[in-house]
Amino acid sequence: MTNAELNDLKKRYVANGAASPATQFADHAENALIWDADGNRIIDFAGGIGVLNIGHRHPKVVEAVKAQLDKVMHTCQTVMPYEGYVKVAEKLSQISPVRGHAKVMLANSGAEALENAVKIARAATGKNNVICFDGGYHGRTFMTMAMNGKVAPYAADFGSMPGNVFRAPYPVPYHGVSEDEALRGLKMTLKTDANPRDTAAIVIEPVLGEGGFYPASASFLKAIREICDEHGMLMIVDEVQSGFGRTGKMFAIEHSGVEPDIITMAKSMADGMPISAVVGTDVHMDASGPNSLGGTYTGSPVSCAATLAVLEVFEEENILEKSQALGEKLGKRFAKWQQAFDCVDNGRHLGSMAALDLVSDKGSHTPNADLAAALCKRAREKGLVLLSCGLYGNTIRFLMPVTIEDEVLEEGLDIVEASLKELVGQPATA
Image (cartoon, rainbow, N blue to C red; front, top):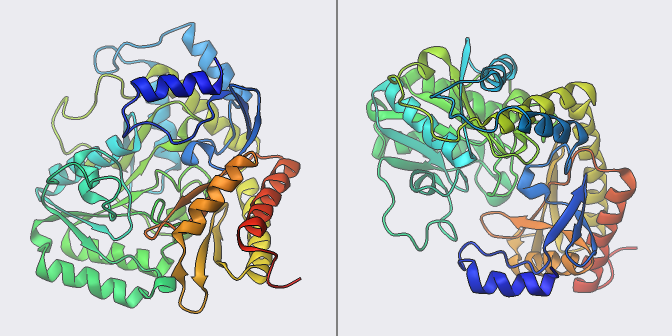
């Protein structure tokens, strides 16, 4: 079918809240390239929102999935377990930097992982409250919508959210929130809203994802760890978007040396197959009773096979080193754009988790969300998938596969630059 025919079906049958505004439909893909239903070639700087760190259809993952399809597709692991689930649990336990010996539960999505992390924290501590951060994003289920640090578009239309969720400032010095101010705000939350004796966990992204790709400093994360220890709360680190090599480490928290009690992960775990995980210290993970964690499809055999293949690719192809190198390339291009364009500001990256802000005034850091939307639209017209994000909607994030070929990377970056020139005029400096 053509793009036009598929769009007609979308308008007729897909709920507005779930329908993509894009008018091109993916037909096939390889590494950092997608071809649509009309045969147009598109460069992918989104990676399925951070899902494809090792690229579309990595051959090793495709091979593993096909092999698993010839064996077992589903039994529900709580009814009849299988090798893949326990092997994934073993691998994740070995590579995840949580305190002590780690145990694992598998789920289907990042939101499910966060929901279960909260369940586990409540069971382990006997407490109810959860503290999250401004700008944070944790999912689209009711509990995770309550945990998100941004209302629209995630929770604006869905009525009351669950209680016992409280908020603290996330340190973003660029927007006037210093580390000291963020810590003061957290301590005030513990004083005024979330009594530590009733608070099960603090949940934090070591690098804000949807909130704008702002990393928390090692000192801030260490302070969170100390506050949790002081009050008998668990530290839950959400690595759904920042994990699996995006920052140049397997997990972003490793840059700080901090060991949390629980880590959640999903997205690039299985190169596009649906799976997520909660990895935590054994005493916490074992706190709830038999059959208290799980689900019909959690840790499916096919997704487990894909995850094991992904972990092999990381070892065999130096993915973490490639992520660091990609980040350096992006950083150099961002610096060039900041010099050339009055609208480009605050280029940043941790490994290849990279972003820049579009502003109407650099001195006041005034966000320009309209320009960000226009840039993404113009880039798409030129054959590049590009995503915005951020609390103010003015951040352009770069989530191309770490395995992207140099020539494809440069072609995509050239499209961004050309689109900026068309939207705001020639660069401010030669």
